[in-house]
Length: 458
Image 1 (cartoon, rainbow, N blue to C red):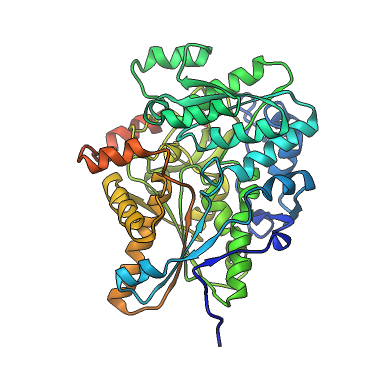
Image 2: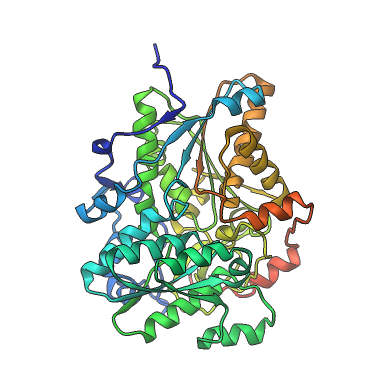
């Protein structure tokens, strides 16, 4: 007989995972290697160490160790806000009249308001261990910038954040929090960098993009002594750090003898979804489950559902290594929708490979439908979700309604990646009827694809 499942489920502090889970160790075939932008040859560790912290590069290239130990100095930080709750959405199930069981992992209860703190703490810790004195980064919705500023304040490292201009205008409170923790914040594109000035000249009046902000952060890191660049999504080591989410979910659900039928996550660069599904995906690859994994992205920036699987730069300024991923092209300029953390032209190479090999499916959803779901969820469950998280809520509701129609008693898990309290401008626009959907035309996408680099034999 299965155990009674409480509304909120937590691990005890002593039960917290002591290792990150490396899904690449279970993959039958690895994603293609990073290519050096100058030589076109696979990047060696020393190439990547010019950009990233040394230990992060080691994690990025690790394809064999399934479990990677979390240092005590990071566990001490995690204990300030982890474990996070896994919630059984009983009231949501009741209101929907569905036989499905709905669970969500809430990562928004820490001060940064999102899951991003899991990797921010790790990356700053390793920077401190390496003896670095400053870091640079980009942020879209502001979640990564907030998390990184918190971690830098804790470990004592200077930080410069390039925030996508339209998000900085939409979310002034995010900027205030980042500055409260001592970081220097610059709306991007800016006139403080060469690449920023070039982008402003080519796209006058642009609201910016994550690709633009990454370029500015990279340029600044190269010109600043004892500094490195850190990234809040996309890369393998970021997904690794976020695997603490999926491990906590699995540990709790195993206790109650629950195996999900569907796991849903929003997807921009891929960090949240990758971390949520990692331990379950490894079991699926090994034939131990048949879980349906769904990546949900905005219809305005549909890298998985309408992108190309190709080598591309991770930034607009074409400074990063080339990565093979689902991409809209580094020159794609997304519309200024309110899910800023999902406005990225490419997808994690790990998730792209899993999607390409058929282990993962993807759906795109329009902005107003996302906010329909967000408001419904808030009124029923009492938690205000971030716009990014609401993409997963939208599809979770859709799947639960399907179960109502078919009578299937599926177990649905989704990632509630963050709180929406920094996104009230977006909610106000929705409630005032001033929110509009934008779906790029094929012609719009072709302009982005035209920026894809020519890579021989790729």
